[in-house]
Image 1: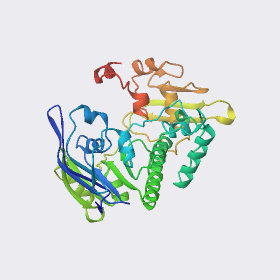
Image 2 (image 1 turned 120 degrees about the vertical axis):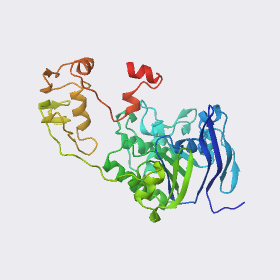
Image 3 (image 1 turned 90 degrees about the vertical axis):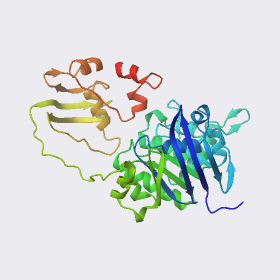
Length: 366
């Protein structure tokens, strides 16, 4: 059976413990296009993609109703391994990489080239370089994944899916942890993938990004599809209205700041491993009560290290940090939190911000 659609999902319904999270949702995707599924958190957009990728939670909670077709043929995908056999790859919002392994080792996991009974590491490195060149996504195969910035970890995930033959690439909230510069780089990569004939499904709730990168858009609200639109034919305000069910103001009404006393003072701060490799080099600034201070920079220019020095996660080589009346330069993380009343929300929230095996209550009380 031939079809002009690479993917069709027809009349999809899904319950989680009696709560209907998808209600008669259908999607049709053509080869070589970038389509968006957009909606507020909880709208059901990730659930339908988890169905497509055969995530275990779907099977463990009773499966779903409806049909999935690849190239016009109905398929029954019961695991991510089966999904990959059909040419479906998924980059999750929380990356599925092994931090202690290198880029090439993560790339080849479960697909390792062999030399006799041993893993051919040289071949793994060569294959990683080959796939990176093919898709113009340069990366060092020998770098440990743990040391990579978030944007490069995402690149490894994309390359890993492409190496396994993904024709359909699902990206779940791909820009949630990226800087604006990293987001622009990701969009250039996705356009190149489209030019290679790949199909991209872009799950998001960021309207401007969807308008910038996608060809068509499916708008989700409370588990239902509010319609499929060509991106060029729908405005940002129309998308917002369909997502939330009412008119939404697109401009932020920002009142003039009225700063008060200094609450944070950083004086001549240094951090690094020798004068030639300093990540934070003689940084000084103040933050006042009642204001928001932005710290901008391309990934790797010390902004993360600066914040981790302030919150006690990294040692200070020289300098002084005061939060209100407290000198926190040598304080422990707990004392900075409890005495100086300072909290830190890290860039990688899953790895550093929560204990994923613990309950919400246990995380809040920790």
